Structure formats: structure tokens, C-alpha cells
Image 1: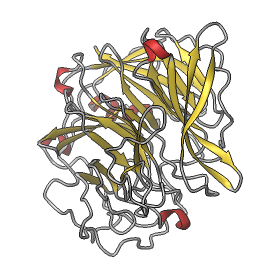
Image 2: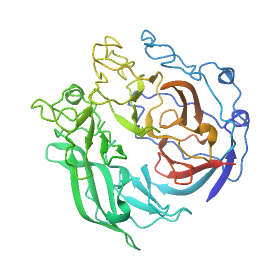
Image 3: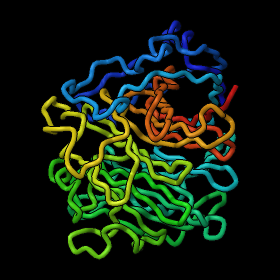
Length: 433
């Protein structure tokens, strides 16, 4: 393992470690080309960043893509910049992953790590030893944004041994997101047994984009699954259609059955799994200390959104939003509409969010209840300071790595673990120095 120190600041700027990464004409969330897995070797110590943000000015200074779209309330975008006071140690646990996507902790502190395009799942020890690929997983459609995505350890794992994962399932006529579960059989050649597919996104569509794929278990034993709207127009127009899973968050039981208190149960014009609608593509979701579900979804060019998810709520995509097509053509006539929710916060330019955790540990007391989001095009770990369900400060961490951050989770000891999105992706651990 390699270790280096940082507090993300002036020395990094002076040494030229920080870099900005502009948007691509393609979706900034999932460009095929990966950045070189940079980052310091050995030990390094830097000082807090000194810039306009240190004086309480907005962290984001680049011009918006859609300047005519104005926030609906003060503080909805471009929050003041803040700086962490704690010096941070970054340790490389393991490397050599092919575009890793997700991390989940087993009870013994080993980690499950997925590889998106290959469809492989690995078990990684705390000191970085990787198992052979877990055998028995179903085939995936690994084109473009497809493949093996999220993984979670079942809430009753100690008894059942069940793990859950999402993937692009190849189907006749296209593909769709699926959720599977199976018993993890540990050992020198790990495998899964008794595999069940418990949920399938409907309808099937020939698209390699925007299927969502994050899993969030709740304390009452339910499972949220985030679903994208497939990007292409035939899918996009279904994001607010209750007869389609596209652009929805669904809520199911761990066996795939539908909870009877879901909001659309019993309606002939709606799929009963649906919890919320009007989403674009959600790769970031987490519970807060009150067990409320938050999500951060990809906008197009401008308009990434942080939302507090409510039962039966409509978040408006594609009718309202704060972005535009990658071509520069308009998508929305307005940013507000009757019966449609406003985001708690939005970004323009985008951060391209993937992975999310709301910090509840004790290793970083100043970070308690802060939101952490992986940033792909922004090449940062984005930190949001919250007060009364509003964003009051924003920080960009790990910018000196020059790496797309795919995933962030909190470990059982309170450290943060992140994955870099690259053909030689790395698993990193953040602790106080």
C-alpha cells in the first residue's frame, strides 16, 4: 500500500498538481477515454487551498452553460467555498481494477468491489489482497455505460450470506437494469449460489446509457433502486410516465416483492414498484441520519441536481431542469412547473456525480452530516456542508489526483473509501493524518 498526506491546498496549486477538466461534447458522466491514474507517490503534505472560496465567495467560478436559468431560491447553486481543517492521509489499498464501480463492506471489513465493463466482482482485504473473480455471476451488457454496477451486502448477511448487485442485463431487443441476489460462498475460489433476479427494469430498450443502478437498503428492510431514463429520446419521454420504470426510483422488498405501502400500488396506470419519478440518471444515493433518502442525479450540460426524495414526488425531468443538450440546443422551456419538485441544489457547470455518502463517523468530527459525492468530469470528491436541508458550503477534495472519482463509501471505522474511474482504477482510503 502507498500512503501520502494532504490537506488539499496551496502547495498543490503551486506545484501544479491541481487541474480542471472541461466538459466533453459527449456526456461528461461517462466518457470512454479514462484519465491517467495520477496522484503522488510516497508522502506529500500540502496546505489548505487559498483562493476566493476561502473568503466565502462561491466555489464555482466558471460561467454557467445556461445563464438565463436562475435559481428558484437563494443558495440553490454556487454555494460558498469552504475548507476542511483536518489534514488528510490518502492510502492506496489496491489498484489494477478495470473501471471499478462500487464498494461494499463485508462484516469482517473485507470489501466487495465491482468492475463495470468486465462484469467481475472481487473480494479485497483491508491490506489490498484481491481474490480471484467471484464465480457464478450472470453475463452483463458491458458496452458504454453498461456492465456490473452497484453491490450491497444484505442486511441479514450474517444469517443468509446474501449479497445484491445491479447490472445491465442483455435481453432480446436490447437490455435493461436488473437486480440480482445470491449467497456468497467464501473461500480460495469464491462464488455465488442460489442466484435470483429480483427486479427487472421495464420496458426493454436498445440503449447503452442511463440505467441508474444504485442500491440503498433502509432500516425497515426495504430496498431502493435508482433507475435512469436511458438517455435516448424514446426513453427520456417516459421519465414521468408511471407505466414505465425509466427515470424512477423504485422501492421493493429484498425478495423483489412490492411493499403494500408504495404510493402507486393498486393503480392500473402505474407500476407498483415506483416510489418517485421525473429523474434523469441517478448514480448517487444515500440515507441521512434521519433515514431519509437523498440522491444526486446527472444533468445534461448543466443541471446536476441534489434532491431529497419524497414518496410519490415528481422531480420534473425532462419537463423542467437547469441544463441544455450537449449540442447546446435547449431541453426545457422553464425551470419550474406545477406539481414538480425543485432540487435542493444544482450545479452548472456539472460535477458528473457518481457515488454518495452522508458522513456519520467519528474520525472526521468536522464532517459529521456532510454529503460526499464522487465527481467524474470534475475529478474531485465533492463535499457539501448542510444546514436545515440547504447547502451552505462546498469543497472539492482530491483534485490533485487528476482522477475521475466513481465511488465513495464510509468504512466501518469511519474512514472514507473511494474508487477512481480508470482502466487501472484504484481503491483509496482517507483518514486523518
